Length: 129
Image (cartoon, rainbow, N blue to C red):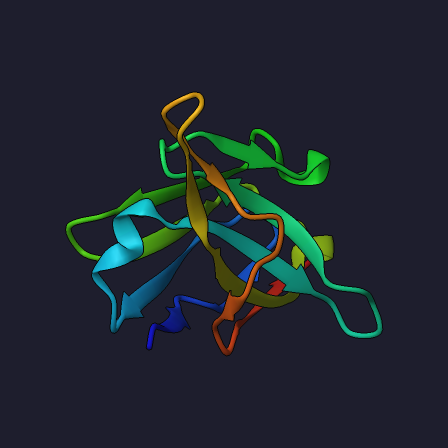
């Protein structure tokens, strides 16, 4: 069974930076997994922030483009989210998540499942203006 544990959250002033980490344990399949970062501010719905597929291709929610960078270190089974130029509206609980990757024989490639099924407990990020 795979477990995800986030770390790196904290309090920072607007304009500052934080790097979140998500350590995966319990499976050697991390290298192929599609991973993502989500956040949920108080009273708000959870939203996807950044996603990375098995090939390292990344996508971002519009409000974080150019400021956040998602990356994976397969040797360390760790997912990262580098957050720069933080704004007060970035304050939220941040979660890492994983989804199954499947092989498509017709095109000989790997693709991400639609749903995230593996979740960490979250790490709080608070940005003061």
